[in-house]
Length: 119
Image (cartoon, rainbow, N blue to C red; front, side):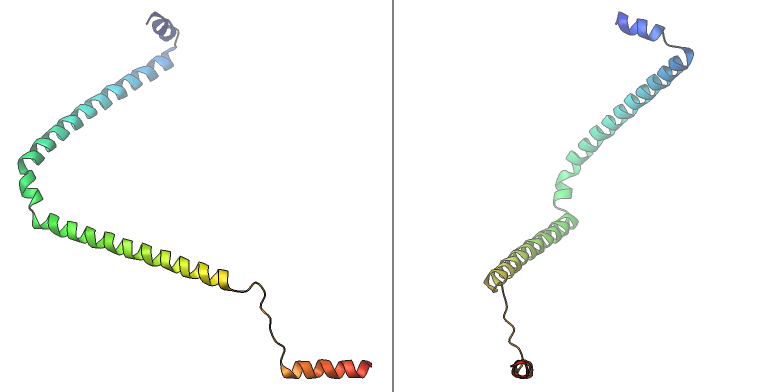
């Protein structure tokens, strides 16, 4: 504590003002945190007293049903994507590395004629 006081004692007026501002900000922050804590306590009390009504609310049931449908759809899409990946992988792996393209009959005839002319 003494070291802190010595360090603070050596500060100039600008630094002293800055520290005062910081102390005010910290104090204000503490007040806001206390207010938020009080609001949270009030909310918890209110929630506990109305919990049963909220749980039985048709709105909450509807939201749960919609969330369940969304999760089911997500699961279906994920399975379809996995299946697509398996199909794609199997088709790629079964494909030959080199594909032989047969020349057309006209191309073969032209090559034969060129070979005959040279000989």
